Length: 370
Image (cartoon, rainbow, N blue to C red; front, side, top):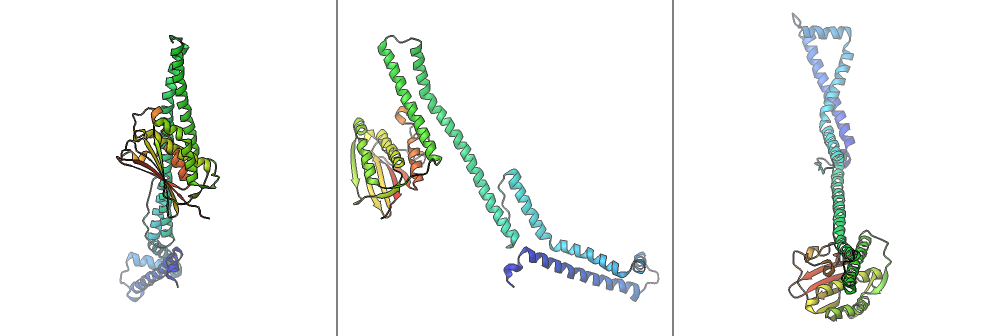
């Protein structure tokens, strides 16, 4: 018989049942021989009270009922002893389950056997790990939601407070002349644009990171898409006093499967970020390269270095490497987070590198073959 089946709980109980019968029968046989010898073989001249009681039971009740009762009792005792480890292990598993369900705590059960209880313990340990992972994700989601609300409240309050202050100044007729009135109206208008940009970015971030609508993928040339975006960014480059350099290491088109609108938004944010923080370097560089089955795009600026401690966090929402920047100069803090969310939805990869000379944002997508 296969050892795998012999080690199952069913067979363990069968063996415990058989051993209990054999052990009980052996005990009863030994007891019967002892009683028979003490009563009939070597009768005492003055029988003890115990011997008198046994004789009375045998004479008035019979030896068969006595043996049957003793056999049942001995069987139960031996069956309890032989199954004690199994029952104890089952109680330990039950206690672990109760601890997980009532207290919500992680609990690891020792796997002591290869039978069904051992398999059950392994599954419970896996379930416990998944439960803890789910609870951790839930706590992280709640914390992220609270941080998002806090960040939104803070970033919305700043321009809104300025707008209300200028409008209150105007409403109280405290302006000395029309020129001053127009000056404050223009400031309020600029703050309103910042506020609208933040709300738009927040809406876009929520849509991207919540999954939003399913992506409608098309086969497109990544090089052509980014070249068109760069042409549209020429006025912004001119205003920043920056020049553009395109380096093409790929001799052919880089075809990928992507949603054009989504990808345009991601690269718009990356290019805008490079222009905003790379003005001091006076140059924007974009390079294309094919690496095996991947298309790589590198967007580089030559402005201030991003600190090594900031690099792991630059794709987080509302994170600004320089906390002293105003909202107007530092952006909403959502542009890079939106770009990463879009690229992640396309199963692409985005990373950042920065040193004293340049800062690179590198994106990679799987190439689509004919």
